[in-house]
Length: 186
Image 1 (cartoon, helix red, strand yellow):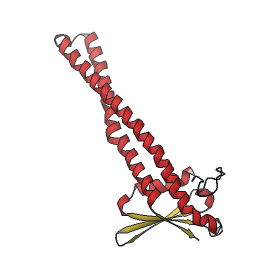
Image 2: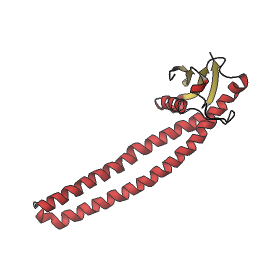
Image 3: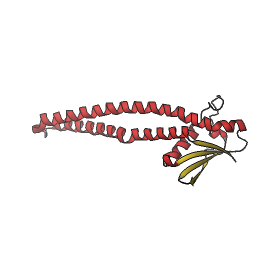
Image 4: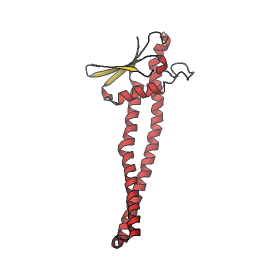
């Protein structure tokens, strides 16, 4: 029961995306006993909605609509569902703030290790420049080269991929916590 219909509607440069779920259990976590609007969304709904928006220009999205079968929620629950969704993404954006802080810390450590490995490589080449053809020096030089390659790649991956991906996800979650959300019965 993981199928969700998606309809994208554009009006005057603004985009609304409608997600049509088959049941309220796809959206609201059945294991969370909290009443609405404090109940959590399912991981599936969170990842599906945020993942779909990741493929869109966030600035163009004016709102989302969540479609559910007519009898899956009471009118009172349906009225609280938009706030439930916004609260969920606001809470989860706090988790992403922490993840970004951890990522920045790891980036600094990776950068320091890359600088240290580069310094070791420069010192090695300076000290052994006349004896680079000896087997032991070749082996040590290869090891230093591999360590530099791995450290530089890891640092590059943090700066270019991981941080950007986290920052985009955080922007999406914050946008979802503030945008217009409609509930549609089907």
